[in-house]
Amino acid sequence: MSIKKVIISGGGTGGHIFPAIAIANRIKKEFPKAEILFIGAEGRMEMTRVPAAGYKIEGLWISGFQRRITIKNLSLPFKILASLMKARRIIKNFNPDVVIGVGGYASAPTLKIASMLGIPTLIQEQNSYPGKTNKFLSKKATKVCVAYDGLESFFPAQKIEITGNPVRAEVVQIEGLKEKGIAHYNLDPNKKTVLVVGGSLGAKTLNESVVDKIKLLQENNVQLIWQSGSYQYDEMLAKTKDLDMTGIVLTKFINEMEMAYAVADIIVSRAGAIAISELCIIGKPIVLVPSPNVAEDHQTKNAMALVKDKAAILVKDSEAREKLVPRLMELINALEEQKELATNIQKKGISNADERIVNVIKNILA
Image (cartoon, rainbow, N blue to C red):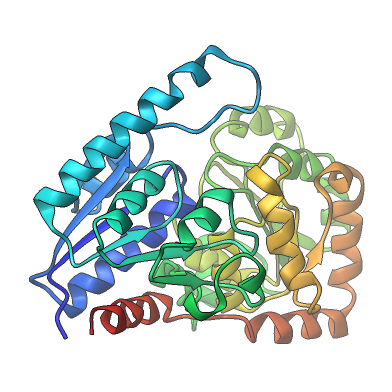
């Protein structure tokens, strides 16, 4: 069974783009001669990230419906029509064996046209609570690859395959890196280390929850690796410039994520689907502070899928400034709770999701 031509569509955020590239890489690993074409939304992140990963991409003139009243919504019907026409032209010219949608604006017109042309389609849903687009597309999709149990209420049960989310292999391979990480971050091996990470742009709530509690952390012998993100880095630098920053590593962005994961005893994170998939493989105690600024409150639902099985702790965004660090202190002193969280989250880790998804594609084509 050979895979010859594949279209992968979607993007908008790293949470959609990364799995898309991971699937493409896996296809190329197994079928080096396979041709892969991406279809994205013009002006979105995928239009630069995908070529940087070595793949061709075509852009559609498409955007989402704005929930507030705005003139932008007037152009939406024209964008949808233009996108459907362009997607049809691209698909007919490229003639793929299968079309994969990973979520994001471009995946809707692409998968809609592929289904109409009788081409097998596969949806890769990252979240525990699917968005409206994927629910709609699943009616005609051949298969739906998911990362969470219990999605039969959203998708046709016979189409669901539990594959997990593809993650960055290099950042979850942390075996034997702890000592190297301690030296890299200039930390004390005898103190507990907390990693706070809020995505590449940062998370205002996480930054503001931590910045006023640095002294409290130090008094409790806790070290901190703190990724502030690009938006607030200068502000956090200014707020901490007169403080004793012993054991506090403030950075705009962590390039050596595998080392940060390796040295952390506890990890504080937002609850994006891909971040959670990485954390399940890392298998350490985690505290999740879901972002409230996400469509359909995806992040809270992702977090709750772990919390219900005692695999994570949730602190609400609205309460984090007051409650996050005190809850961390409790956890640092509760070794049994740490052990329970680590054991339960490890059970959810799937490290070969890309391989599982490609196997689903092979089965569709067989």
